[in-house]
Image 1 (cartoon, rainbow, N blue to C red):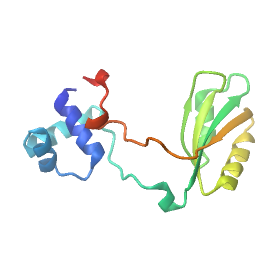
Image 2 (cartoon, rainbow, N blue to C red; image 1 turned 90 degrees about the horizontal axis):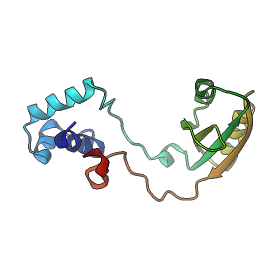
Image 3 (cartoon, rainbow, N blue to C red; image 1 turned 90 degrees about the vertical axis):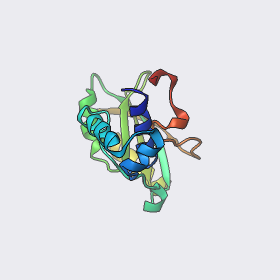
Image 4 (cartoon, one colour; image 1 turned 45 degrees about the vertical axis):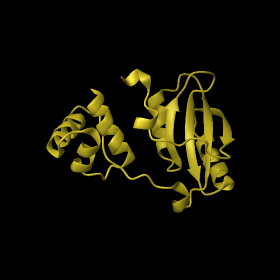
Length: 155
């Protein structure tokens, strides 16, 4: 992946509805050259899809929390993933280092809703305990890669 590929990805992250011509103007390529590069980036899996970013509050999801899961024994990441995926309020989940086994990001309508979600998750047979934090305000909420916040490690 070269600098042009990164610039194209940055343009798509900022506006996935931009035309190939608009992206080409921005990065100094023809529309057809941009299309060929986007097709190649999709084929190699660098671009996995195109989505709309939606303001969660517009859908009534005004409260969010992070919940650490502490699991019994040797609960596998796959088992955790299957269990937490059943809860639509869990918008992301990952295994982590440290004492907890997993970290969940939850979006809900209010604190009581968060509490009910945590209660449902805590009822999973492998969950020993949870530790939660309610988000008060978001300080940074940026897409993964844009020309403005590019990592020097990507060069």
